[in-house]
Image (cartoon, rainbow, N blue to C red; front, top):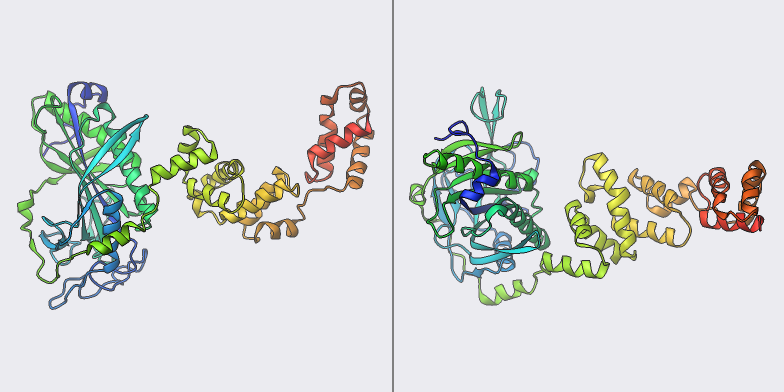
Length: 501
């Protein structure tokens, strides 16, 4: 096998100047079903190891699988969203190989008769659209999970012993495989990242998976090869397995381009192999030589009947598809009047759905975006959680916006209300009442504070009387301090100028 030490890496820009990169992306999606693909075991995450297993998912003799109907429905909806043809008849196959975390010594998958074929997904990079063609999307089951104990890296090499948790074995997966992605040139890493991001958006919009890469619910195998020119035959590919973040997808492509180029320029052959990606430094290392399809000895699964989605059912499912995510973002961007940069920032922060729901709850788009992308994004970053995981919802934010618009709160008080909601003190109105945060709007109380501030700052008062209205700042600040920040600053300014007129 090759190693990263076989040849010095070629700088990325030099590599893409000398070679044409070709991508292939295989994305495994863990479906959000309540039970496994072929049995009734729970799919809940985080259960005690080996507590969600049965004879079927353990592959015990005499056990018989039954196909999960919701998984089939999810597969069809994914295929429709990716513009695929939906098979009128398809079946499962056994993919035979040994691995410790696969209890049956074969994986029930689909081989030559997948449920979805010939689709595409358009992605945009730097204002240019790339069409990524989808070869197939097929149903299969996940394996278990190995835990290697005692080593420094968490891998089997150097470990004292290994443990296997079969809770994940049998969880429904959809594997989405692209055709060779050509014509990306130097933007190959960005196109790979954009495709996985766009695919994740589609899955989330369909509600078929949470698609959380950090939990392994969406994993990408990155295939990469180089050729001398766009009209040359495809080169030998490597497959970097189980890349689990968008950033890592981009880094894996970039590294493999440089590594392949180094080998080819040194006159060495690229070995067709699987590789591991290392988050710490963005490198890859050899895994195992890559099998061909015949090595798996596929044959039709004898214990499962074929799946034959009727055309009427497929069309009924087509009618349930949501607005495509990219189309929806363009519509919302126009409705909200935000720039491309602002829309991308909201997308990156996971705020688009939250802002939309806040607007639907009655807030204006500018205010909704201000609070989610400002104070709440800051709090999410401090707490190390996703924006949507904060214990405050769009209805709460819309109510805070309404209270500000009504003059019952100013921005400073609104931030305190948000603090209270996040602290579990109730809804915004509960926090306002509990903390006594309403704006002081009684002119009598404000005039008393204004008079006190004027008496304490006679030189400032003289400047204002002389026509310098901008000099009123210290007076307004003193009143705000005296009222604990609960005065309406604009009203205080009006009263100060009236007193000194």
